[in-house]
Amino acid sequence: MTKLAILEYPDPRLRKTAKRVEVVDDAVRQLAADLLETMYAAKGVGLAATQVDVHRRLLVLDVSEERNQPMILINPELLSAEGRGPCEEGCLSVPDIYDKVQRATHIRVRALGRDGNPFEIDADGLLAVCLQHEMDHLDGKLFVDYLSELKRQLIRRRLEKERKQRSSGSEVRATTPGATTPGVGTARASTPAL
Image (cartoon, rainbow, N blue to C red; front, side, top):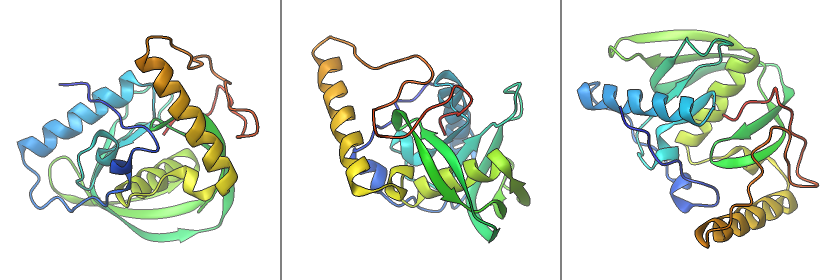
């Protein structure tokens, strides 16, 4: 398995729409394994192929407390969505930023599994949020798109500044849980990055 580089907002490659996976073969299964390794290493609960600059409709997630129940969804489709509620989200492509987003509270999704066989899943809670978040990535959408333009500008500036400082050799990113950009949401140690 290989740990992959995660693209960071506002990288334009995050805006590409992923193409359907036509055949679930060993290369697709290897990509799924690499995505899982990358997600676990980054301490996230979900990762879409788009986030590692592979524009195929594939996502992985694991919302279990023990981090031992990985899920692989190939060509996921939202079949139904009910209810609406706020949830706090973060994203591996938008590091250390958390904010509230309105999402459907109950969803049904159809996808192919690692074996290429179709399945359907009903989800609520964190699983529903994670599925919607990762499926958005496959369509070139990020959770910050649900925020105001002002918040997006603040986030963009902060991340660009941190990238410049990292490239010059001085690390400034806060790595402690709860670190946020003032005026850009509140992070909680319990809020995972998706």
